[in-house]
Length: 245
Picture 1 (cartoon, rainbow, N blue to C red):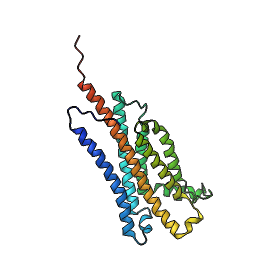
Picture 2 (picture 1 turned 90 degrees about the vertical axis):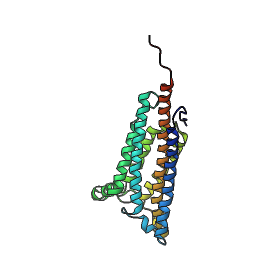
Picture 3 (picture 1 turned 60 degrees about the horizontal axis):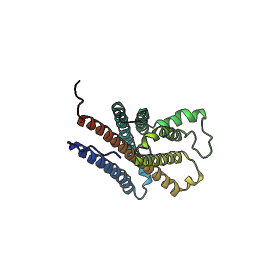
Picture 4 (picture 1 turned 180 degrees about the vertical axis):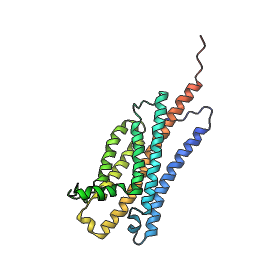
């Protein structure tokens, strides 16, 4: 990880503190909120976790919007680094796609886009309704997950510069892929009440925890790129000017 330039300014230390503060806040929110819902919903906590109008769905929608904004920040700092000649990444557009994807997922959570697609478009036409082990027409969420995996391929080169970002981003992708697939599965075991109830809570909690992992990976990327950019600018400003001819 790149170190901040130390000559002459206090604001890098302030931003360093902000980075840690944001990470701690994200972690605390994603542990506390599901736990509070679980306690409030006891002795049948699964009821408060299910349904598109549930508090956890609102929380997920807000987090997706924040991830969209964070993806946009990474995109712009990547562009700044490339313009300054200090970021070797040949393309910034994958981060813009990440941003737009999370903004779309935020709208999906709020306005039930994938549910409406399934009920109003796929099922009436009989499309994807006979896939073994999958709910009738419920293929949109797994499709989102597959698109995320494809997009990750274009991000890996950039993520490799910050090893922890790469590891955490891949862990988030694995977790969100599992939650998307399990949400669409229709297996006999899910007819057992306690299994179904556990699946409801695990799916929703897993989704917001995956979002927290995405947030950590993207925050580390953003601040590392910002460090590189600030270091390059500081080095140029500290270098002596060339003598006039």
